[in-house]
Amino acid sequence: METICEKAATVDGVTAPVECLDLKKRSDSPDLYAHFHDYVELLYLYDGKLRVWLNGKEYAFNEGELIIINSKESHRLESAAPESRYYVIKFNPEILWASNGSAKETRYVLPFLNSSSTHPRVFPASFVSEAGIGALVADAVSAWKNRPVGYELLLRGDVLKIFGHVVGCLSDLGVEIKYTVGSGSLYGIMDNIIDYVNQNFTSCDERELAKRYKVSYSYFSRTFKQMMNMSFKEYINYLRINEAQRLLLTTGKSITDISMEMGFSSPSHFINVFRRHMGRAPKQYRKNIAKTDTAE
Image 1 (spheres, rainbow, N blue to C red):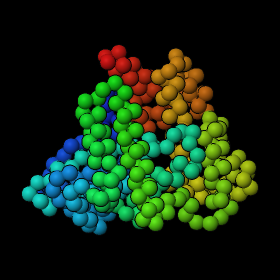
Image 2: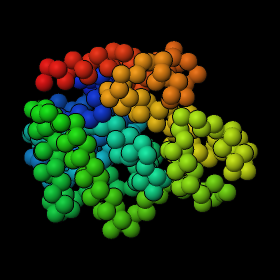
Image 3: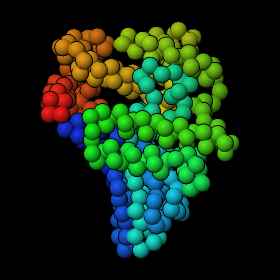
Image 4: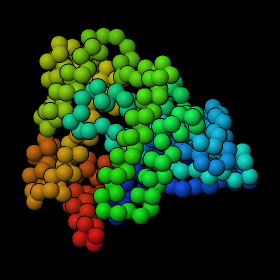
């Protein structure tokens, strides 16, 4: 079966970090294509029964259950009842940790960034009900539909609460959530490395960090990517763009000043990286958000 890449939704011309949907599927309309995407997807089935294929493996998905689809995980579904109704929350996994968070916080996210992770995908209705996840999902979907002032914060709060319960459930099941996937001189001090990077992301240099921790550059680069599921450059750019968004919306600083403050080699480099992350150039992003705020 052909697999296609699905793009994230946009709101007012800006890539949305969270998208919520209330969907239904009939037994006579199965997915014709498997698809994947960079964001993590939560499905809460509130009526009916589904069959879900994740990387070709079939899962039975019953009413009241929650299923988690990892980033970049190929998936498709079909209804095992005449009609099934379900809520979907799709979100950029980066919203699960703060830009100044430590590796202690970041490690909870990493299993959901790897399409080959072995953690449970389907969470039973008993857990979902006891944790109140159905209400949290419904609240997120309502916030997405109605978009009251501050709805973005409500969405992020709901997603964080849901994942807090999920991580607790995995712990109760004996599933260890960790980022260390091997052994070596960096694995035991990853918390220190991430804390340092989070505090110095505007001036961090990967080669200098390798020297700081007395390892080769190739080993540092390879191990960082293995543990974080993204390269050092990708992580640094995430931190810089996250802070650049704040500066664009809360200060009158020019694009050039922000690019220099964030440690980019040139304004054009900053603009290109920002556009890749946000779907819009910094100037357009600032203009779109200001226009939205004025309209509200």
